[in-house]
Length: 226
Ligand code: PGA
Image (cartoon, rainbow, N blue to C red):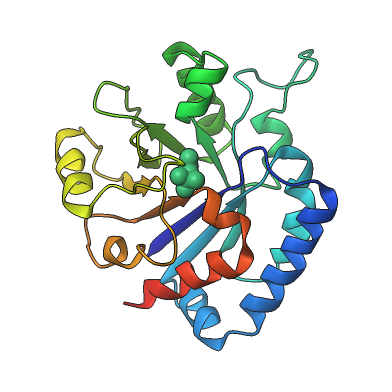
């Protein structure tokens, strides 16, 4: 099974989210090839929009197998008096996965390893799957994370995706737990995704900018057939 995780980051308003969802659903349901990949467990797509659009997107895709919704973050706190927080407990029946420790959060909101660990534990407590982003071998890995997404900071949003050999070299330096899936993220689009899908060493891709366009995301998804 290959995994494609779409990270919208802080893009789109409600109208643009609806437009995306309508077009994405139409493209998926109109492609027997893509439906076969999803139905046959060759591919799982996890879309991670901003919090306000999670339930909306869920309603669009809930009847399609192997298309799931994730969040881009989760509260470090359990349910309770934490104004403004969005908890694993609150989202557990809507999402299946959550991205934790993205380098943009480590940098822009000073997310520390202590906070990241608490978030990983929250997900685990509510049986949600953690997609743990790491920048290099110095970031900590946690056994409770189902996915480790290697995202070199120079590749994110730069247009310069890292070549497959270097990604695999990093995988060997990381101490992955036996069951963990290994994902690459950083400037992947429909023109350069195929080489990542061709190796057994990489279980999938975390896609930022290219996931904002449903056509582009579907075009990437279709290449998992190779
Ligand atoms: P990008 O973002 O595909 O736009 O480089 C990837 C990410 O930050 O998850």
